[in-house]
Image (tube, rainbow over all chains, first blue to last red):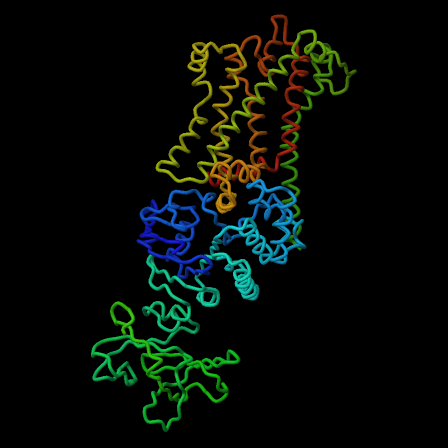
Length: 351
Length: 277
């Protein structure tokens, strides 16, 4: 394992514990995404790896070397900040060149490196400008270029896309993925956006309240969420969850029931993703009845929001939205293979 | 329409008030400029004279005949040295206050400020004894040290605001790019704060240049700045008003110049500290 968090705890002087005994390891060349809501400790983990914060306990190892006490400049990592942190008194060229100037690179080689990186990020035209003359997307590219120009083995990015508007964010996301493939560097990317995590990551570490709650391939996180929180956090629209009881192999919720063979009796949380709910004819015997509340054509799909007593759910379908009217009954089937079962108390996934 | 005319009336009133304020503030200075070009008779005429035959005699009389020109050099030496010291010591301190958190930080910061709150005269005698025992009395070093210690609090107060304006991520970016903590300060943060540092330096210079009380107490002969030289023109045979005015004009010129140069920065620096400090 190349980069290792070994029981890393970070407590701030005001008493908040941002990270609690984090154990995490990843390989060179990965695109690791630290995902979590605000206050989950993801940014703290990134800053600890950068050396901008010192852990209260635990060690951080990079390729077998303990870097816990090393200052940032000796760690060989580049970083992109959320607000870009460009040097406003220097031109774009000098911003990108700065890490190389510190390393006293000869002028000709420096120029070649800066121009190559600017070309890669398509900002060659802006090299003479000042950071204040750049749009958000351009400033973002300059920040990425500055972080990567000196060929660090690891590039850290702390919510780099969150200050961009929606369209640009999608574009930059694709660019980052391409950059990762072309440069073959290790990327560590912090975000609260589950879609960014799913699309970019080779592995996702989901953090919540300073603890690592799932660490896996993004597909696995989507398909087998480790607990109810992740189930509802990953995927848009979120997974439908229902509180209820299992009695004799049948799940009973307030207003509907469905077969759930092989589970012990008792209270559980049942989950199913909106796109995995099947729409069936009224004649089908085991149909679950909900009433249509709102229909949203999000093209090419349709989202149907339906209610049944205390429960509500969302169905994603490719059917024509005009076939569904609010107030009408909706007949559903939950395929047994698509069901997720969580513990009613802890929210942990049950086998 | 009534609204507009009342608005105009208020505006005229505001202008009138400002005009009065400007006249009140500038008349003595204009009078002093005129006085520096008057001969003895015109100066002391019982009816103040606005028109007279100007003379340039007062300037050489005081600066060459009375050998006051070294005092101007003393003034420059004292102000420049104390300003440089203030910035060199104060800027890193202010940076520390802007960036790091430690127990009692705000109390320490307030303590710095309180050094400016005591009436200057209250420590005049201890300061005199202090410099006497150091053997620095009647040298410009004493004045430089005194001015530095007094202006330091102001520098820390102003500069903290300027540094706080620079996002912390800038320091961190510089450190990620390969600078040490101090390197980030000297090579990235300080250049970014240069306008603020400049404004603070100018204020330090002005305060030191204008200072009279400590300079008067600490030096009597060789190290005198211009401010201390002026009372020497009050002789038993009467005050040499023309020469006093000439020295005063020379003494105020750098202040006028600097104030025009950096007034915008200066106001921002002072108000910034006031709000955030």
